[in-house]
Structure formats: C-alpha cells, structure tokens
Length: 201
Image (tube, rainbow, N blue to C red):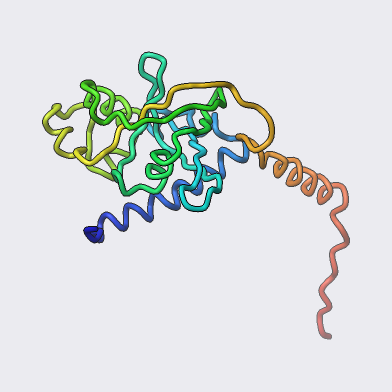
C-alpha cells in the first residue's frame, strides 16, 4: 500500500476532526442548521454503518446529492476509506437526512455510465469542501478535468428501504440543551453570595 503524502495526511486529519464536529452537531439536534447554507457549507448527511471487524455501529458525516429521488455520495479517499470498506462488507446502512431517517442499501456504482454526471452533482453539493480540500471546481471544470482529478473517488448509491424511528437517531444528545438551560436558570435565580475581598489595613 502506497504511503500517504504529507498533504493527504493533513487532509485526512482535517476531515477527521471536521467529521467529529459535524456528527456532534447532528447529535445535538442541529442537523437542519448544518444544512441551512448548502451553497457554502454543503449538503451533509450521516451514514450509520457496521464495522467490518468490530461489528460496532459507526457514524460518518458525508456530503450527498439527491438525483432522480436517489441518494448519492462519494468516498473521496477511494477504496482506502474505512467507512467505504465497511459498507462494502455490509451494505445495510442507516441514513440521517435533514428531514428524514431511514434504512437503506448502499452500493458502489463507480462504473455507472453516468458516473461523471452523478459525481459532479455530489461535489457541487459539497459546497466549499471540494474546492478547498481537493482543488476541484465541479461547476466549471470539464468532464475530462473532473475525471482526472477524481479518478480514485468511489461513487456510492444508497437506495431507501424503510423508515426508522426510535432512540439512537439524530438529536439523541439534545437533552444537553435542557441541562444547560436549567443550569443557567438556576444561576440567574440563585446567583449566590459574592465574597467581599478583604483588604489589609
């Protein structure tokens, strides 16, 4: 396996911490807000997948586009992305969208005749991410340019199977807001006595 360049490693780290932040926002119930400026910050969903070795549930935020009623996303780091390997081993996933939560089946459709068209739609839907992190300007570059720069990208299609509800979905940490609000109210109602500083004579 080829070693990652310093730039690739830096980009992986940026995505790693960015994904943690995005996932936290979704779990705090702010998924809609994170999708409020799609032209700038992109369209972001969360995929819940199963670890191919651990069997544990994993969550990964990714950019996505809906084309002809079907959800598409891309693995920018190609076949080496852990979440990509997981969904290839077990294609049953759970999808969090700003207005829906459902179970789906993922498939690599990188050999689709419409690959460039669909990939372009996903990259446009990534907002600033594609230009900033990969130097890809999907709205203006030609098919040949896009094909060259995104040659290793894997195109993923996720077909909807069934709606899902219950615990463990987006907003599962929204109770934090009630806790923070309660603490603030208590501080306002019971500010406590301030200790006067004793000044030496």
